[in-house]
Length: 305
Image (cartoon, one colour):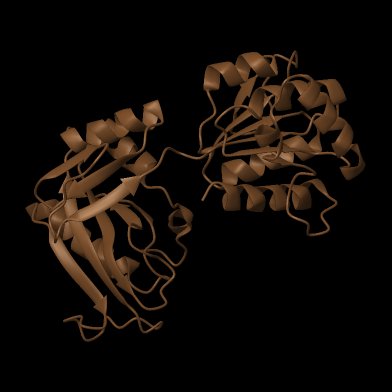
């Protein structure tokens, strides 16, 4: 493990699992199955370790290198392992500075593992599910039948952010969502054919068409920052009645009564209107695009928990 470990910033390990499997490579999946004390990571946090790479983190950098050694031994012999760090650990040098205790399951997964294939299908379909494993046998489905010592790890669909707009604020919000590891769609209706210089999916569709196609769910946030009253209205009219977990609009607070009245006149119900975040973002005195994006991202994180 090098002096710097940027892959530790990755939280969701599914992309790494799918990448390894797509290359035909087995990998070791490490999951926290029990946690006590004040550590930074809780039950369900994971790492993925291959023969020459790794990602994810389980502590403040205290155990990752040692975990990788055990994981690579698991890759060689195929035998799952239960590791304990902190209180009750058999390793005298495996104490955690936080005074806590972590119990980990380390298991080898083959590229053609059935549970992994089911997990990938659910990822594409945006379906939640539960991964259950005892280290030897594993499954993924709508409900998991877990034994007392099994790892039982729920997975939600990847968080998704749909941003409408094209100015610096919209770009900053989209970039902030990408930095969180979310699937980000940036929509500029009738915009240029060339995509923006960001790692996002670009759409030129009208709001109703795009949202009808994407079908926002509880893990989807919709943020409109077009600065065009009519276009923002079309976005909100389509997004508020949907199942989106968050809907917000960038704009002056004084315009909110007018927005709500117009939406209500167009048939958006009271319960849907109450979901609207306006003005968008937490109240932190944000002014610049980067500051506004930070406030919006934080508000979305809280809403999609």
